[in-house]
Amino acid sequence: MEATSLANELAIKTLAKAERHGNPNVVADTLNKTPRYGGVNAGLEDGFFNDIDPQIEITKERPIHRLMVFLHAQGLNYSEIGRRLDKAPSYISNVLRQPWARERLAEELRDAGRDELRELLKGAATDAVHKLINLSETANSESVQLGASQAILDRFLGKPNQPLTVANVDPETLPDSELAKLINKN
Image (tube, rainbow, N blue to C red; front, side):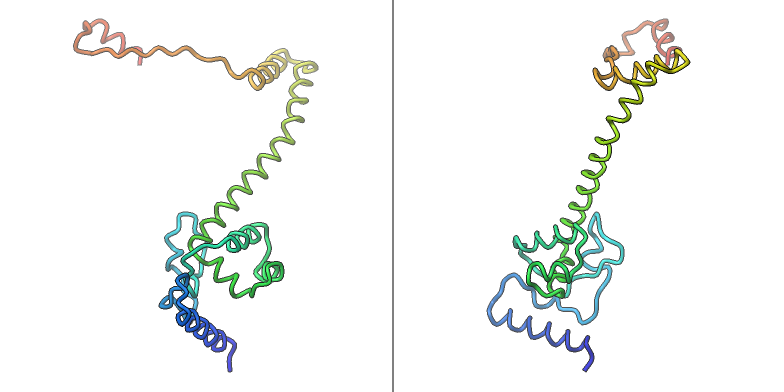
């Protein structure tokens, strides 16, 4: 017997058992014998390329599912996650294919990227400030010294506010000379 037919037979038995026990978290008519592309996961905003739909839909997220998503975002594969959580890799694969799991995985990866970039910039900021200080003190050109000094002040104190005046004027009430000035100004 082929491995795929064994897996399908096992999935059918698992579904039958879930139906017999009235498990509300499993939707029986979502069993697929072959992986599908472009189904429930195709419409996700941050979907993954060639995302395979789950074989069994899990309608309720549990804390262990969130842990699986977190471990997968850390770079662990299904087998490694299975060993840590004492779960079968096929179960983990199915959980991580759920639309809600895919959305959370994309969010975790996006946040991890931001955190890594933030840490990288924090480390580079000190070196950049030292370089600016060095330039402001030792550059041959006064314009470079001035630019470096301004950059230091802008980063420390912030750029100065620019005054902005906004007036609501009805063009019907303005004389023609004032309208001409406004048009020529812009």
